[in-house]
Amino acid sequence: MRPAREVSVVAFAQTRHVRAADELSEVEMLMPVLREVLERTQLTTGEIDFTCSGSCDYLAGRAFSFTMTLDGVGAWPPVSESHVEMDGAWALYEAWVKILTGEADTALVYSYGKSSPGELRDVLTRQLDPYYTAPLWPDSVSLAALQARALMDTGEADEAAFAGVASRSHRDAGANPYAQRSAAPASEDYVVAPLRAADCPPVGDGAAAVILAAGDVAGRLCERPAVITGMDHRIEAHGLGVRDLTDSPSARLAAERAGAFERPVDTAELHAPFSAQELVLRKALRLDGQPDVTVNPSGGALGANPMMAAGLIRIGEAAARIHRGESRRALAHATSGPCLQQNLVAVLEGGEAE
Image: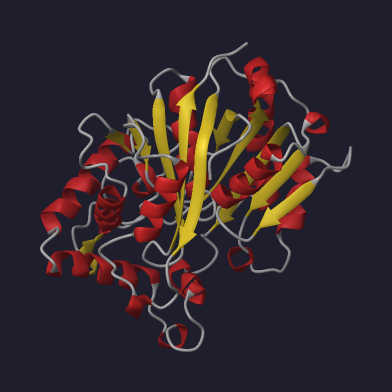
């Protein structure tokens, strides 16, 4: 989808991601992030036209858990609010559309997830087809390993290629103060062959928030706004057996519709929880033919993968590089579901303040 109105990311904030934030509730974990992102624009909650959040009741263990985090936004003045049971990248998409329609000029988007209280590999099994696949209880790491094995069987990759992605990601995460994992795990054992511990994301808790603003407002709130020039999201078939796990046509189509292929990008923040998935995404998004692109300079999801926030963080990290003048045109990607089932792609470019 290509915008008829200019909408920009003007601020981004995230937690320092940890293995377990046992002492904090979701609200307590989120409030410092909301305060930080608002302070960066000097906006108050009363000046935000629309608020949208992303989270997952399965992680929280209670229905309508997102209503509790509205305490972090503030009960007064009343807010125009919405929620998606998805990664916050999809909440950002809803807020973006809201601004495009002219119903809002500013929007606050936030997402959060605490994976530490339960067994994440089992929780994510509930995303699967409830009749044929979920009763078999294939966990998320086993399915990612199946995808990695498919890449190896076609000759497109090997374990050395997976290790190369993991090594670079952990090295870059070492320079990211927010990353949960700043070095590769000590264990070199397989978690599920052919994936080793370094090929798999850490399980942890975290949150993120972004502020969007329309063109005329964005220039007053940010010195170098990150303009969203296009964004789209697509989905694969639910049944894993009818998909080619070595490719991601939905990511490719989303990128095409977002205008990603019109000109080269210099930064790509890819939501690839497993090392093999980065290789799938690089091919689908045509990044291998762009020698000047920097992939996941933040360390990506192998550095920190807070459920329901990692995709929003990819957009925020790409925007932050534009804010700092380190990137001119960036691609940000988010995924949800097993084996890259659902994919969202946003293209961001540097704008100038008024």
